[in-house]
Every structure is written in C-alpha cells, then in structure tokens.
Image (cartoon, rainbow, N blue to C red; front, side, top):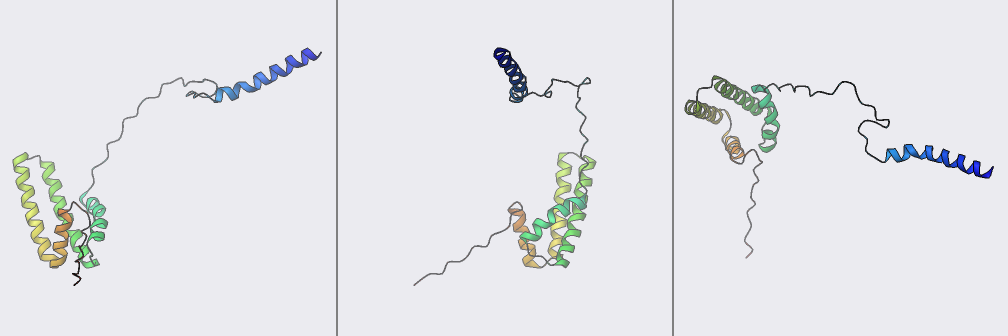
Length: 150
C-alpha cells in the first residue's frame, strides 16, 4: 500500500512539473506547440507621403524660435518666407531638371530667400539666423569675455 502511494505521488508530481519545465524553454508556438494553418506574410509597407512645405516649416520652426529669440510678428514673417521658398524647392525637385540646372535653380532660390529675409527681419535677427544655418541648426552660444585682473 505504501509503495502504491509513493508511485501515485510520483506520478502526480511528474505531471505537475511538466508545465513548469516546459515554461523554461522559449517556445515560439505557444505552450502546446500549436501553429497557424496559414503562414504569416509580410504586408507591403505603405509609403509615407512626403511632407508638404507647411509641414516642413512647422517642424523646423520650434528649433529656430528656440535658437533665435523671435517675437510673434517675426515668427509669422519667417514662417511665410520659409514656406514660400521651401515650396519652390519642392517644385524644382519634382521637375527633374538635371543636376546642373537644379543646382542653378536652387542657388537662385537661396539668393531670393536671403534677400527677402534680410529686408523683412531686423539686422541682428537676420545675422542670428545666418549663424544658426552655418552651425547646422544648433543654437549659437555666446562667448563670455574674460576680464583681465590687474
């Protein structure tokens, strides 16, 4: 009788430990090994639509505002000018003019944009914008002058 009880306890413990042992192994098909009947296929990724000129400028404006202290009027002017010339650059890219002609068109757009910004913005804000562009969109840090202790 005691032997039968030991066998019964052993069988119960064995079947109780199987799920615990099985859980220790990485089983990608679930605990019972079920697989899907239909294979999973890769769905074609939807192409992201290119940003519009307004969206590009709106994404960049917070960085520019943070780097250059602009009031609301100057922000509106800058947004309008940038949107106008970004739109012209997008249109030039769509035309596929060729490398030489495209570069020439972009240079003309840049010259017109700089002239309009120079006229529309105060001189110190315009210079700060140029420094911002030269630094690749990073805030310009002003250097402190050291006083000479004598």
